[in-house]
Length: 136
Image 1 (cartoon, rainbow, N blue to C red):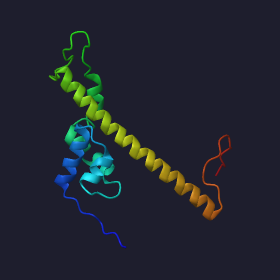
Image 2 (image 1 turned 90 degrees about the vertical axis):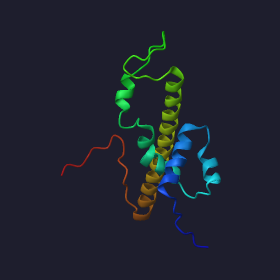
Image 3 (image 1 turned 180 degrees about the vertical axis):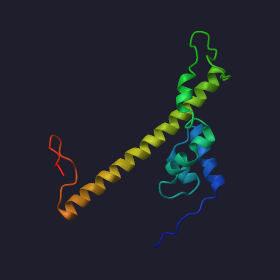
Image 4 (image 1 turned 120 degrees about the vertical axis):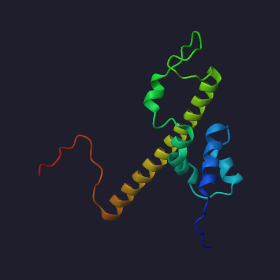
């Protein structure tokens, strides 16, 4: 049975990413709910996450805008209540976890690809620790 490429409208992709980032729903539940195949959601998070959250582009700035725990008032012009800040941080944490999972899968795929290439071509590709580099 041949699988055809599944087309998902961009607005639906954004809606799914927003749902994932703002609720406790898992990716597996979203795959089942929307009848998705493959690893689409991680790709969409990377593509639309900053647009929907507005935190990727200003991550270093958001790290500077810490709230004062003693009086729970924003330190720098950020007018978020403690609960809103907590919710924002939870969404950012979920997005970062998803991005980390994606990078772990990517790293595993690259490692597998290198292993297969070494086996197929019978040449060492990985650098051996402590080995001296050849001088060209």
